[in-house]
Image (cartoon, rainbow, N blue to C red; front, side, top):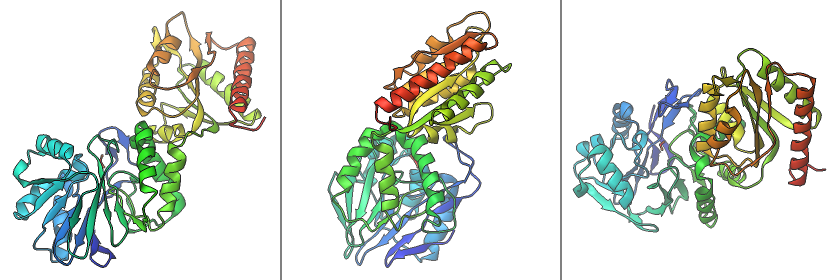
Length: 396
Ligand code: FEO
């Protein structure tokens, strides 16, 4: 990847990882990703905002070479996770006069994770500024985006926000700026779902703080740069807001067809009642797609057979993930079939303890579903419609 100018004196010097398909050994990356790093050249000093994944250090160095960079005064670290901090030790070696600029918590993490010497670090606090001559960096401490030490950097004169992970997308593209708003919106929603959703309340507060600033460009640390910041700010207002959509998300597994028959019937029943539904067969689904669907669905219904005495292990995985991600759904329940007994419904309820949901009456039946079981699914669909209407999610 080449170094590219954003505005005079500000350059994108990060790298594209076209081939990466898994992040944190957890998050699928169907579109690869980028690790963005930015060089800000003031009339007096030069700063590098974040670095890149350690597997890509040489490419970052090459981009700096391309710009003829032979001195860096400050390396700003917004976040200690290694996809942004992993090349800091190599940068500190290459630029022995450089100071690492970060907040205290991030410094402590960097010392622990990368064994960086505290002597190289200048600690800043919320609202502090770094004078580069004709350019000024202002630091906004923004904890829990998505670690406790995260911060944002605002370049005052050019009105560019460098929010690191916040507003990012795992989307590899050769375009410096958003090439297609619809495509990047979807990638950013998936990224929000997988990484930011558990921290919805903190992010809401940070959005309110940012609302007072003029921001012309948002340059995150993953994915393309937003030259129309409203695209992503409006999306985050929507995703972090309390409103939910008239939608049921239905992750399920079926072993011998009984749960599948119930899911098929239930999907139709919901559709007939004007409720959107997204079924996810967990033996085939990409968990990122499931997470994205959870961002604004009003209701989650889990479909599971009983394996020995509990839920199918792939359902357990999805329920564990949903509990971690903590979507804003308001209602939940379980449907499915068992052979001879077990505690599938109770186990799944217990597993979703972090969700602030009301549990609706489950439809959990023995063996292959019968007429009365399909009728119970119809009643559940009626109940969901009623709850959605009462909550103002759909007009009555
Ligand atoms: Fe892109 Fe939290 O690292």
